[in-house]
Image (cartoon, rainbow, N blue to C red; front, side, top):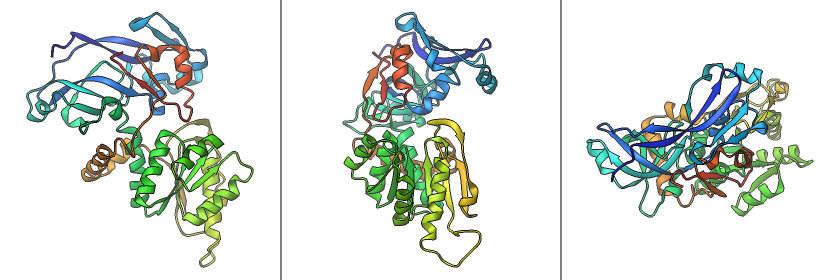
Length: 379
């Protein structure tokens, strides 16, 4: 196959005058080295984790688009406080897009690289997948099984591996059940399927009834609506029944993490062991892994006892600590269950230039449950 001399790739830049610019840059087509391949990117999702690089601390409510087609540019103002927080990235052109999939169209001389030519592969591209082509190490891709398309494999890494790694974290730290917030998300639905298949209880926290209905249709048993007047009481009941002592919180802000720890302690108090002024002895853990709520995180530690922790959780950090066997086992499961447990459903398919349209940005930046956008760079 004859490759073009150049390709388009999306970059995000914050300038010294307080302006965010998102645009497509023309990049020369590279020549793959021995163990590298060139993938024609055919599908790449917009995940919440992509937004931080795309938009930084810009005020997206004031975003504007100009130009047409490949020359379209999105700009948005960045406030002085946000500029101070992003000082390290000012003036840098940052590539965007954490994952995607496509067809291997060229390869270096290495045996493994050559064996991938013509195959459909999923790629975790290190924040550079919003592009027409990518040159990546052959060892970095996951070949898809026969019958799987690039759209099937576009979301093979971030959500599937996060959901599986939640379960791995639970087991490694000696817990037996999970609490998950924003639980009707694409990731949350995968996590429910995993837990049901593996016989693990999961307490799902949602904000609206339609989100609860999504999980109910999946067969979820414990669904708690945080907007209900009886939320805290229902949460304690669910934690008492399941014994869940580890939670993964996608919201990050507000009092939800604190509410979960208080409920865990209250559930533990229903089956007391020896009295202790320090509360229950079973360790209670809440991990913040997202920032859907941008308000400050609130804590009330006097109500938790003394056996608790709140920390941050990030997929690359977990995989870096896990041994190679764990990472390979998780990837193999994703490949085998790509059309079942780890199937992703998209409400919109857009081009690279569409992703720079301010009206379309308003829609995918809303991070609405049940709404997931797929960029198809070849459009």
